[in-house]
Image 1: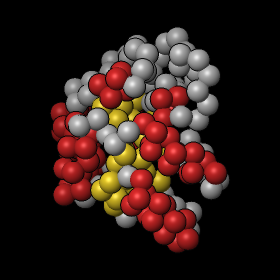
Image 2: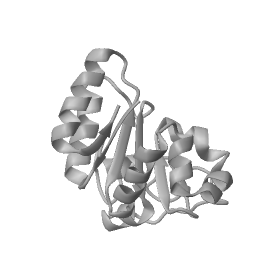
Image 3: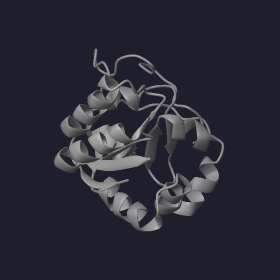
Length: 165
């Protein structure tokens, strides 16, 4: 997996759009942000059941505050998103489904534990924890081939921060 944090919505949206342009889908792309970041960016509040099920509520699966297409805010409003209230993390993409059943354990293990559980080395997880607390958005994808891995690594080094491959 290759991951990077992005300091603002625009750079994260560009990286996400670039992934889509390369043939990846929302089922391939991991998106993580603090719940506070989602709210600051204009995400509507959503109802959670027991803190570990997919988000439910008005606008889920559709537009949040109007038509937004394939933007980061649209992704975190999708039904494949899981919120971890104990650690204030919102995750969309394939990791959301994998972690949904273990949300209580993830919340108990904290943000670094959750990230390490996703396969991110502890040292990098601590960096992403700080980035997420500061309002960054973390994207990740398992590249289909080496050319994509190299492409995303190079692109994200110019638009993102803390690229891990």
